[in-house]
Amino acid sequence: MSILRHDKEKEMQRSRMILGQAAPNFLDPELEWRRIFAEMWGTFLLVLTSAGGGVVSAISGSEIIHSMRIVAPGLMVMAIIYFMGTVSGAHLNPAVTLAFAVRRNFPWIRVPAYILAQLIGGTGAVWFLKSLFGTAGNLGATVPGQGISHMTAFAMETVLTAGLVNTILGTASGARNIGTNGAIAVGGYIIMAHLWSFPVSGTSMNPVRSLASDLLRNDFSTTWIYVAGPLAGAMIGVLFEWILKGPPTEAGTLAAQGTLDLERQEKKD
Image (cartoon, rainbow, N blue to C red; front, top):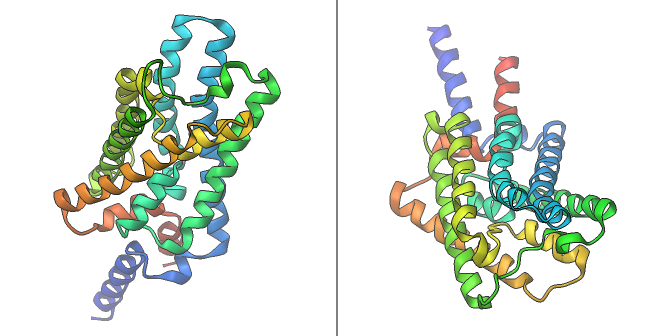
């Protein structure tokens, strides 16, 4: 009976942990710094790839490079989810972090540090590009395409981000989708979005990705599009996820927060 009781207590503790209610473990500073570093490094790599594609394309003037810059961000996100998704959840995007928090898969107390880490990582990536190549290609800035109005670009960024957030939340809502399938789905969506919408808005879907370039090139004339659009789209994506799936799931919480605490606790037990 004692063995059964112990097993039951372990399962209850695991469930509380998954739901983020075991605050002392989820807020363990020994683990939180790893998550913050993961978000900073992951966002650095994502922005380096996204903005760097524009910079290298401008330097080379090659159409092949232009095609590669469309596909590269999705492949990079896929790789990042594989190598650090279990550490921090691989948000890499303030819109995604806020979406997880509104969805109740992620504690609000951890949101500011995640967003700050993303800002540092993204800005660091563009600074790195600027130090190597100057302001070539406007530092990979996302701007509306030729003949595209600001409102059209805003609407495009809103819809694209809603789809991205739906993809992220949807693939995180079932245990079988965490990791391999989630990485493929999210990376594939980003590639698909770039393939058809890049000439319209530059396909940012990420406030940090656009803000970082604008900060280093000191041009904020279109920044609002790429901040307001993704944030609005993220909230729409959360609403649609509630309509489609109902309340948040334990699997979604694991995907949003990573499994460092859970793995550590299970080793102790």
